[in-house]
Amino acid sequence: MANADLTTKAEARDFNFFYSNGHHALKNINLPLYENKITALIGPSGCGKSTLLRSFNRMHDLYPGNRYEGEIVMHPDNTNILDANVDPIEVRMRISMVFQKPNPFPKSIFENVAYGLRVRGEKNKRLLADKVEEALKGAALWDEVKDRLQDLAFNLSGGQQQRLCIARALATDPEIMLFDEPTSALDPIATANIEELMNDLRGKLTMLVVTHNMQQAARVSDYTAYMYLGDLIEHDKTGDIFIKPKDKRTEDYITGRIS
Amino acid sequence: MGTASTLENIDAVRAMIKRAKLKDHIFGLVGLVCIMLILLTLLILFVDLVVDGYPKLFSADFYSNFPSRRAAKAGLLSALVGSSLVMLVTFVSAVPMGVGAAIYLEEYAPKNWFTEIIEVNVTNLAAVPSIIYGLLALGLFVYTLDFGNSILTAGLTLGLLILPVVIVATREAIRAIPIAIREAAYAVGATKGQVVGQHVVRYSAGGILTGVIIGMARAIGETAPVITIGALTFIAFLPESPVSSTPPFINFEWLTSGFTVLPIQMFSWLSRPSSSFHVNAAAAGAIIILVTLLMNGIAIKMRYNIRKKIKWQ
Ligand SMILES: Nc1ncnc2c1ncn2[C@@H]1O[C@H](COP(=O)(O)OP(=O)(O)OP(=O)(O)O)[C@@H](O)[C@H]1O
Ligand SMILES: [Mg+2]
Image 1 (cartoon, rainbow over the protein chains, first blue to last red):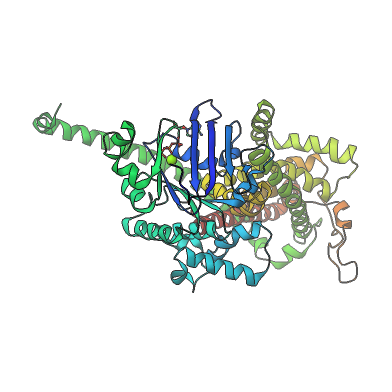
Image 2 (cartoon, protein in one colour; image 1 turned 60 degrees about the horizontal axis):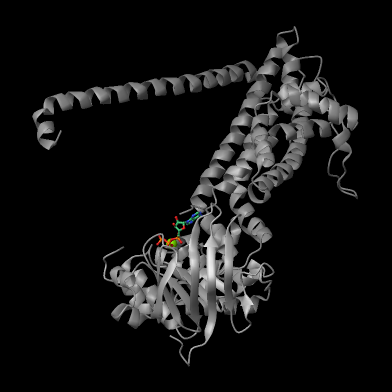
């Protein structure tokens, strides 16, 4: 699988995760995320996709009693982001996230996108405005909202809200972006918009995308990882996974025998 | 029983549905009667007070006169000013303490037996009879801290009294904020303080204010604790004005002033043997009810507006 022209942006090494109730949700995960590539995470419900994704920005730290074991290393600085000395806030400033359901703040469109910059202490109005515009353009939302940036974000449609959340995540120039089933709450047209957007971002950003939708994984991702009951079964180029999976379980899943 | 059997017994089934529906109607009716009884009682009470107090209610003198030995001249001024100033102290003391305590319990307190006990007791505090607060205040504010029988003492006492209401309302408002919103804030790198200050407090502000108003509406009619701490019943002067036109513009002299409040003024008129004072008492009662209803109305309207603006999905 090693490939000469690939740079690894981050990788999980012998990574285990335990929920506070003792549930061993992730077992010895080894998974590289290649720079500027889209990696899709697929697998049946409850296999640990969200758990793995949320480990990458230390979301589990918000709830007491959860425990990580092993490493998730970021390159080029070789930082183990799970290290107790690394502040989760620092990790979240480098790795941003888009959730399953759109979750804009009850603030204006502008303030939603600017929020990440505000928590970084940015006060320069000119710069904030430029960054917000850039992020909204990156999220293919600018033309629809440029005349009503001060409107409440809740007044947008579901698809627009999700693109707003993507813009919010983009505005801080993250090194990696995480998506947890970003289109599962959206209609087909809004889904197509988001997929197109991810395609536009390809090559500029390292992305990890959880999806239940095989076609979506096939359409948008460069690499695909298949998980089952907390194990990472297989990880390869998306084309290879879908055409000639090595593991019987992967094959069963993508052909629809297990769901 | 399949569909066939339902069809065969269709008449019996219809009769059964009818009986069940009749029960629904009866329950509905009983509920309606109960509601009407409650509303009617309140209405009769209010109308009665308005009718009795009519001559005073619509006379401007009533609101600008001090109490007097003559019923015709006796007015509500000192009680109105006293209640307003006491409420001001109540607001200023209860809101920061209540909101702070609620935020601590919701956001910062570790979940263990100690905080559990605190939580249970905060809720129980709301059920403590108000005269107990009066006794506590008498010991603490009047004797130990030597605040005297002052506006400060009364305001702090009523502040303590409504603290549980403020805490419970604040916690409910905080809990209504979806986890997804907090996670969204954390995910862009916000610290806990930023999440609390820039999101939690702001989105729950409406709910908090609603709770505060409801608490104040209760406090404004409270009599027992205020009597316990020694409010006056006959007071023919006003406290020093909190604001003045000469530097330093604001002063705190008024905090130490003696005072009376609406329900006590009403009570003192009511206990006069001369029935001519009862007109005054009725008018004061009507005003108290009006103010209470008004405050509750504001709270309801605010809650409605907030629900319209911030609708969690
Ligand atoms: N907070 C939690 N505490 C304990 N166990 C949890 C918690 N959250 C999830 N789990 C368990 O961890 C396992 C993995 O859950 P996870 O949410 O990662 O699955 P998933 O692959 O994302 O599923 P889905 O496709 O349904 O979103 C499941 O067995 C789940 O029941
Ligand atoms: Mg999931």
